[in-house]
Image 1 (cartoon, rainbow, N blue to C red):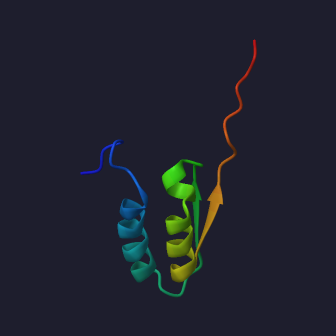
Image 2 (image 1 turned 90 degrees about the vertical axis):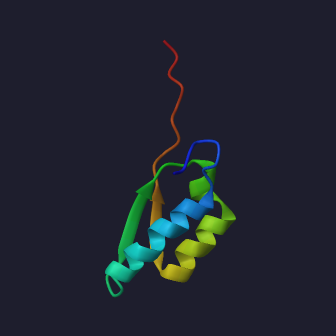
Image 3 (image 1 turned 45 degrees about the vertical axis):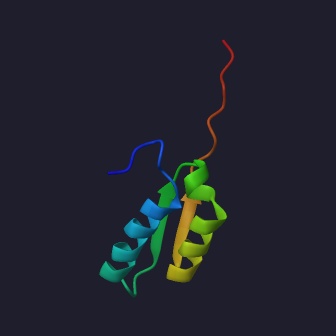
Length: 65
């Protein structure tokens, strides 16, 4: 189990591998938030190696009322 204290790029690798195995010839596009584990160099390397294109949601904007 992954907790917020231990969340890093490793769980994403375990997600990307079976995803790419299930769809080896299909283009894969993922939409992720901009958390550090999603945007890390390690994660970007894994994405590139597996041919997965990641799109990031915009950063939240603090609204002043």
